[in-house]
Every structure is written in C-alpha cells, then in structure tokens.
Image: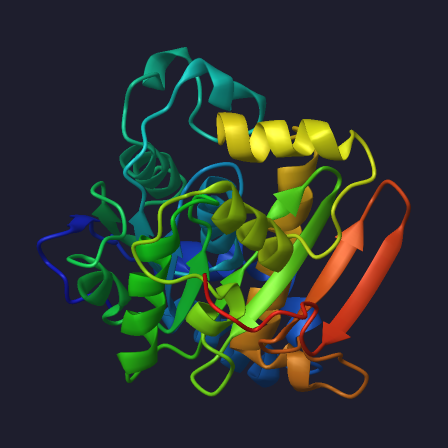
Amino acid sequence: MIHDQKHLKFTAQPNDDMYWERVDRSLGWLGNTKTEQYQRQEKLKNATVGIAGTGGIGGQLAQRLVRLGVRNLKLADPDTFDVSNMNRQMGADLSHIGQNKAEVVAEMTYSLNKDVNIAVYPEGITPNTAADFVEDCDYILDQMDFYEVDNRYALHRAFRKSPTAKFILKVPTVAHGTYIFKYTKNSMHIEDVYGIKEHSELTPAVIHRLMERIIPHMPNFPSEKTLDHWFIDLKHMPIFAACPPIAEGVLAERLAQAITGLDTLPGAVQLPVQPGYVYFDTLNWTTEIKSGKWWRDDGKI
C-alpha cells in the first residue's frame, strides 16, 4: 500500500479475475498446491517496491515486476530521455525525448493493465526526498547513476531507519558482466563499503575508489587508459546494449524469489550481504559468489 498521495500519480483499478488470469503462467513454479501457489503470489501482489533510477535496468524492471504481479511501485529519477538512451532504455523513443524518465516509465507501466499503484518522484532521490520515497517500501532497488554518492547515501540512511524495508539490491552492469550487491539493516553500511566521505569532490582518487568498490572485476578490454578516460575525464561510461536486460532479469528473479520465499527452499543459494557480491560475465562465462571485502584500504577519502 502506498500512502504518499503527493507523488501517487497512477491509482490501481483492481480486477481480480484479470489479475489471476494474467499471472497464471507463473503460478506453477510457486508451489506444489494451488494454496501454496496463491499464498506466494499474494506476497508479490501486496509488496511495495521502490526503484531508484529508471534507466536501462530500472525502467524495464518496473514493467517486469508488474508482469510478475507486483501492484505497488515507487519510481524515482530526475533525468530526461535523450537519443543516446535509445540503445537500451524502455521509453527512449522519438515521442519521449526530453521527458522525465520516471514519469514516462510509470505511464508505460501503468498502461499494461491499470491495476497497479505507482508513485513518481521526478525530482529523483535527494536528502529531501529519500525518506518519503522509502516510506511504505518493502524492498528497494538502487539503480541510481554511478556518480550519485551523496544521494545514494541519503537513500541508504532512509532505508536503515525504515520499519518496513527489508533490503536494498544494487545491480550495476559493466562491459558484459553484472553484479548484485545486497544491503540489509545489519550489513556493512554503504558509507563504509565505498570509503568516500560525504560531499567529496569527484577527483581522480575518489572516482578510482568508486571503480574499485563498484567494479571488483575491471574489464581486461578495452585498455586501462581507455577506462580511465571514460570514468575520470568524461565521467560517462559506454553501456553495451545487450547487457542491461541480463541484469534486469537477474534482479527480477532474485527479488521475486526473496518476496515469495523461494530463496529459502532446499538447494537455494543465498545472496551474500555487504561486504560481498555475486558476479556473472557473459564474455568469459565467469561466475563468482564473494563473501567478505574485496579491497585492502579501509581508510576514507
């Protein structure tokens, strides 16, 4: 349930018959009996998910979650669509150039079936909006821009104060690989994972620290010099268009498994909490589950 009337832009028009018909193809994987299946699906139906960042991963994820049966979303993004987004982002088309991403994604997602509540934060996540955004959320997905350190800290502080939010997942893509980072109330705080003081200038040293903490496996191609040019000089990293859908799928799977409890079944592997990550790369078929720090220097810069 979303109580934030100021930002609630789309209100559900419930149709239970259509709801259960449209999620029917998923139900078989939720349990051995109809009762078990419906109980798990109800958890998806009643969950409130906040997506901070509705670009290449977050935008598609909003629709995926609604297709899975989630009926309460909160979307935040201050950015607007431009032509360079067309290679990967839902809503990036000629009719939406210059429009706010969160508002466009919300409208497109609502149009699927109109039985979802969607609150929209076109101002994005800031120290002034983080608490309102996190309110009512059961799960939070951090898909904010790479360089958004202060606003990301604000989001995580609001999460740690929330009585309802269970965890934050952050799933970035780099080259042909994707990571999952999980934060809980009891895990290492993001301020300690990053080791960057709030309000720090984005100097080369600070950006290198971000690269180290967000990208444990730096790509071997292209060269280190080219990577530094992208991240430090341009502050703009290319994104291979085929990679965000992989991250979106992995994120949707793990979130749905957590909401329904499938991740507690025998044989299921739990995501490590911070410090730690899961990594998957399609170029060399590398997978890794890392528990513990992957850096040496604990000092803050």
